[in-house]
Structures are given as C-alpha cells and as structure tokens.
Amino acid sequence: MEVTIREIGVIRSPFKASDSIPIQSSMSDAQGEAEILPEYVEGLHSLDGFSHIILLYWFHRTKAVKMRVTPYLDTKEHGLFATRAPSRPNPIGFSVVRLLRIEGNRLIFTGADMLDSTPLLDIKPFVPRFDNREDATSGWLASSLESKPEVHHSDDRFHE
Image 1 (cartoon, helix red, strand yellow):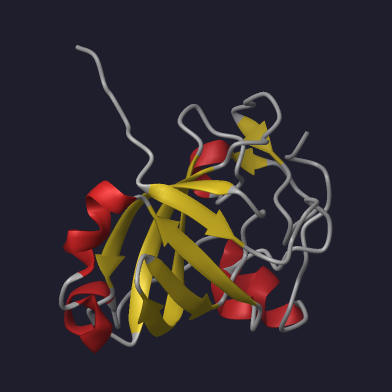
Image 2 (tube, helix red, strand yellow; image 1 turned 180 degrees about the horizontal axis):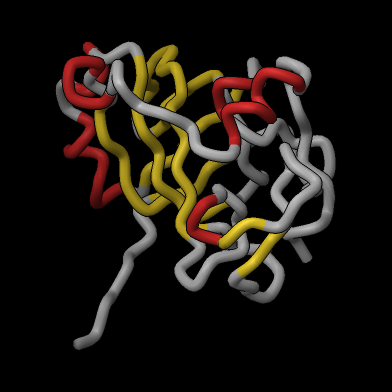
C-alpha cells in the first residue's frame, strides 16, 4: 500500500526558529495564517461560521524518531505515543486554533504554535459536541499540568 499526502497550503507564523514556540495552541495568543493553494480554495466555503478550526500539518524540521522521549512538560522518559513530541514516524501535527477571518485564500487565526513555512495538510472544523470529551483523562501529564506554568515554550530537543 502506498500512502500519498498532498500539501494544501503553507502556514505562516511569527516563529522562525524552534526555540520559544508555545508547545500547544491553547498556550498561544500568537497570530498566524494559513495560505491555501488555489485548487483548494473552494473547499473553504462555509468555514467562516466556525470559531475554531483544526489544522493538520507536517513537522518539516524534526530530528530523528526515538520511541522513548522526554517531553516538554516532564523530566522523565515516556513512550513516544504517550506524548505529543513532534519527532514521529509520520510527523503530523495538529492545532486547534481560533479562526479570526478568511481573506481570499488566507485563514487568519490565533493560537499559532508551529514554525513559519510549515506545510499544511488539512483543515477540519472544530465541533464542541464532537470534539470535547467530559470524561477524558490526561495520563502521566495530569500531574505535570498542575505544577507547570500556564505557558510553556519549546526548545531544540525535537527540531533540527
């Protein structure tokens, strides 16, 4: 089986280097924009009614994959799939961002937590009734979230 992924655009953000990027979109008030390729612009029809969208993108500057990593919010190693570390076998990232407006082929949003020039793979509307889980738990991360500052920034441990 062959898997093909097509870039549908590029994400612009104020972050030119991997250090000091907020590690999650919920920890960021930085503005960004997604520039959509012309052949996909028609797909933006009706997206303007959503307050939040999910951006799926390719971590294009990650280091080699390791199956055990020390994530940003802990000092202990965890299995890669128990983290959101960007160095992955398929380095796909996602961010839930607030959609401010659509200008032609550009989606202007807040919550940027990705490098400038990140390849955009897909856009999905965030639907609270589908995407929120009242009974969700956070595993090892629960205790880290209680003791860490509201905003935590990346360093170079996962990026080239």
